[in-house]
Length: 378
Image (cartoon, rainbow, N blue to C red; front, side, top):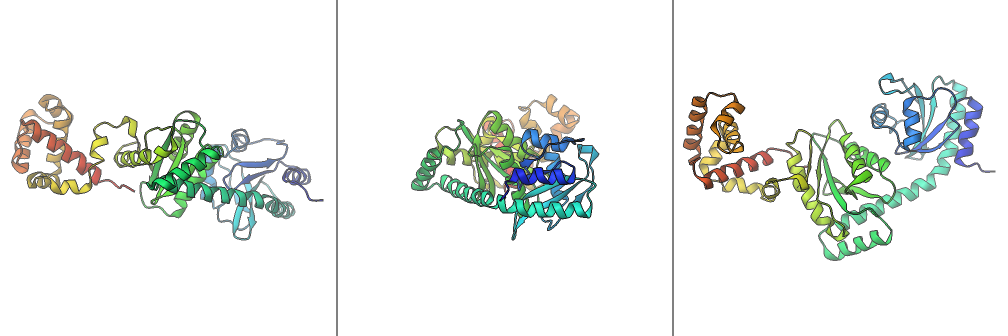
């Protein structure tokens, strides 16, 4: 008689005299035996939280579990509360369906039993994995249609998601993320894994659009926190994240997406690597201007921006402090005489009058545009 996944886990635990756990491909538990003996913090958090902790995920992925073709021995990591363990991947052809976990030490005889159990479990998990893959393809198609800016496709996607009871928590928000540096395809795959592990089914729609990672989820509460934490945990490289404005009608997703892209441009030069449209000030306007706007600036201002960066820094500090000489000098650690000299040089090079309101506005706008252009935009 065919056994279920829980029976496989319980039987293996009884044979080996040690606890057994099976995760899906996203490192969320599918089945686990009675957890007797000393458990480590990672397994406890995995079972209680229904997904592996972020630091453990990073360690396990770095160990190569996503490419291992057979049992993988993983050393203990006391710094994150993880005992030494063995990972046996659940494979079906070229598909990776999940992982079976045992604590070390494990004998060759134990490994033979565990590999047989993993093969049996893979056959049971495969249909669910197929259904999950189909659902994710469907979500990707709906996401692409929703952000396509083609009215008929937007309407059909919004109606379809509503009929299928997606995104029940309103308002909804769009997040956009890109790597802060060079990254391969695995970066996006890991980001999606993290998001899907943290967000319940139908509580979010995640995928890629125009080469960027995109997630729609509840703007506030647990869903929004889960998105922020999952993207914030990415490293090598870290993620730059832009958050759009909240909305209730799914047909407005395109507007939130556009605003998330604007926030993403600002995030590129924020220390945190994140920016939220709702918290932007003048950047809401500046990010709407094309990069070509810099080429339309007066030649003197272009010359200043491309020249002595000490003058550029001085001008930015002066304008950010509303022309207050005392505060600007303090911020730059300059003597007032030195600051006055630099301001005269700025006026000469740029051909502006810093006592003129329009010239000051033009200078400030030019500086903001230059700063945005200098940053990666995904």
